[in-house]
Length: 212
Image 1: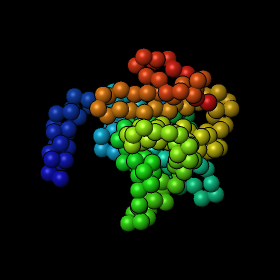
Image 2 (image 1 turned 180 degrees about the horizontal axis):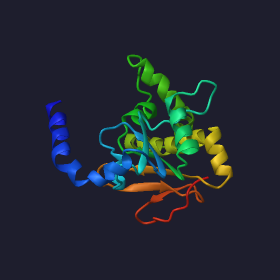
Image 3 (image 1 turned 30 degrees about the vertical axis):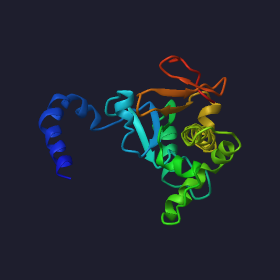
Image 4 (image 1 turned 90 degrees about the vertical axis):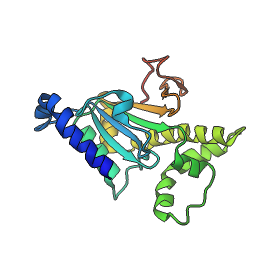
């Protein structure tokens, strides 16, 4: 914990004074253009990977970058999505999975989660991705997990579209959805091409079509 406190003290002493004007502007308003939904994994840092400034991204992080389908009892993720789209007016939503995801490894390998009932219940929102992934042949466990990560991104994009605020924004042509997978070891990102429905290198295809 001390290193976290030391980090704050360094921020207050060195970083904040140098960025004082930015924080002055952010003190009374925010205008993020992108809602970034990623895993809680400590190795995935949205602002670092995308090189964005404070105020640029509206971020949701949870185990497995899950977006539950809209339902009669919407939870925190649903409320945050709705606020980002309906109140803040974001123009883009990114759902970003990552390599070596513990949540998706548990799903793909049918790991027993009896000792973590809340986690087990939460990961049921990835059941559709699990069914698709199990219908395919995988040469290795790593391939199985990598495939699960991708299928989960697709499944969560589909779940996202069930939210009324998202459906309306898509119908009005003012929102784009993006599916990404970040590779921790290489620092690369594969993006879902909305036309071909295949994942392609984002660095090789920076103009990849968004999904609708």
